[in-house]
Image (cartoon, rainbow, N blue to C red):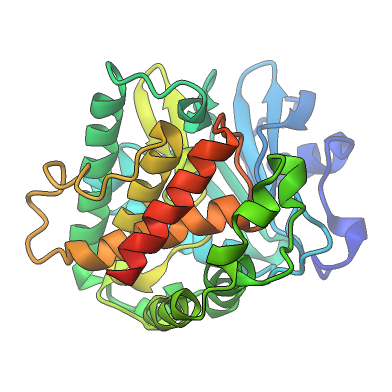
Length: 335
């Protein structure tokens, strides 16, 4: 059955169908029944549900031929096959798998992942509203250690072709390097922050910035030495009683590690309102050969695309702070 057929999509109303699949795969017992099936979070790309029985709780995740949050944006439904390969890779490397939910099953013909449920948790987007400097360094240190482990363990990746993720990477490329830098924004920026559309026009229409973004976009599309998470931001960091976990690696691909580090740096700037390129250098001291100037450029792009593009965030920044950040990011790209 083609998963692109909407009749095969799982929803919170698919309790019977999901229960049958879980029983068929041996994930629940013959007499075990789902007592609840509902959303497991505010994911952008895929449908993610929490399936609860009297004995256990599981996470069930399925891709569709569009972005789950923005159904008008087509997206390759095979992206979840790459995500499954990432979880399978992680399971072979304890330093990576220790901070990820366990892969319990992968059903490729249904585009369906079944993952460990980490229990009561929340993503780290709360740092956009309260970037507590007392706790932020510890969180960033743990996440930096995980990212270093991922990059180092992947240098001997046996078959990078399984991770090329070309279709999704091209979609992401447009939303990072092209769409935010249009004279007519793809998002109503004034509805996000009054006055921001006109205040950001000089950035969106700067030909020098557009050319720099094009060049960085070419780097992004070039296969590289390291396996990247590809979307290493607070929405992919889960805060649990066992410490921070990393989820949603559907944007993974083999590339330059400076992209992951740059994205992470950019989101610290968005959370704190301060564009500080060297914030993570101590945490990545063991990553010899890191090109910090390139990571800084990717950080600047991430700040600009999140403020000017489609993928908006729950930021607490006012107009003055937004303008300061985009000006600082643009300056970093021009240097």
